[in-house]
Amino acid sequence: MEETRKSYHSELEDLRSLVVRLGASVIEAIPRATNVLLSGDLEGADYLVQSDDEIDARAHDVEDRTFEILALQAPVAGELRQLVSILKITSDLERSADLAVNICKAARRIYGKEIDPVLRGLISKMSEQAEQLFQAAINSFAENDAATAAAIEDMDSFLDALHRQFIQAIFETHARERMDLQLAVQLAIVARFYERIGDHAVNVGERVRFALTG
Image (cartoon, rainbow, N blue to C red; front, side, top):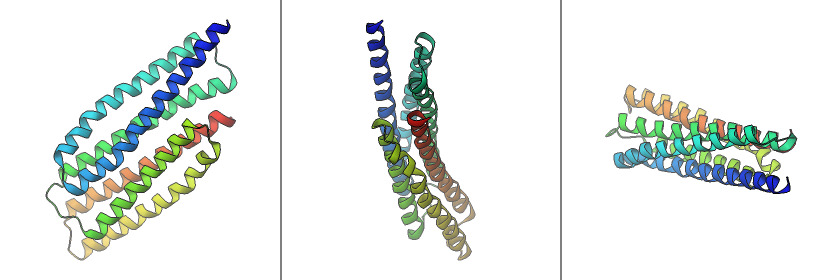
């Protein structure tokens, strides 16, 4: 029985490591997608779209392993909360990677169009904040840090404020006839993608707190 429990805990730690590595891939995807958007690097867009398939496969592997542990072991209390949280966190990671891909797809649709310098600056800020949010979320998971997890929602407030500022800047730029409607619409959609990435980071923080405190 003791050997079985050791194996179980080893499997759980392996699972946690997979989630952390998956999170690192998402963190890396955010600035890559932003670079694609701001530079018009279509090859970079293709790379991210293709790498998303790998992220999806890894996420499904985590889910399969988690369900296997749930089926074969008898997790109780904190262990059960941790496994349930891993399933939900993995879903948030996969969806965030999809949002990074969506940014790349938007970059394709506006390829060749000039983005106003003010808007470019705000895009960079939203990207940086989304990346920081996810870094904090993954760190809180890796280190079982409830305090960091609790702080993520406050960090997200800044990203929400940047999103509102960006939308206002789009209206003002379009009103001055310095941006066509298609570009304005696509950039508004992109801003929403960054905001949703932040929301998923908040979700990860909430899952971590649930796993640790119930």
